[in-house]
Image 1 (cartoon, helix red, strand yellow):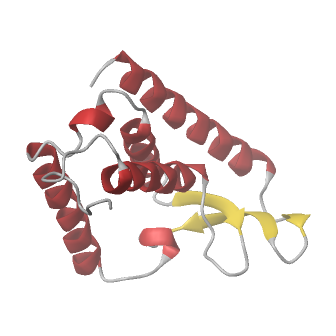
Image 2 (cartoon, rainbow, N blue to C red):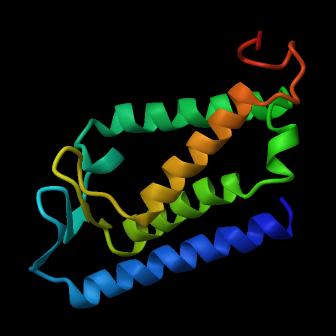
Length: 156
């Protein structure tokens, strides 16, 4: 990983941890309604796993292992060759993941604070992770630079 990756990796961790610090310090028991019935800021201590869902730890670690195995397989097949060296998207995924892991290790919970009624409460690290995954998936599927043999789908 290059300097660009490391720069964004540490920016994302610092930003996320800074926001979580402010949430813990100033947003204790109150809710701040940003957009009524749509967006609320609320300090939630997430002791669950994926988006606060309480699933079996065995299932959680199995899914996590499958994601890493798939990533390693794609890496070895050179699917990421054109993407990783030019983009910061892996820094988004790793930075968000490490920031949430730091919460889990040092606080015993993950600080979540963005609440939308139709979804669970989440944080900025989750946004970085999902955004990075979506951009990489889009590039893997729709990149016009890929040869037909390496693409997931053929373009007409």
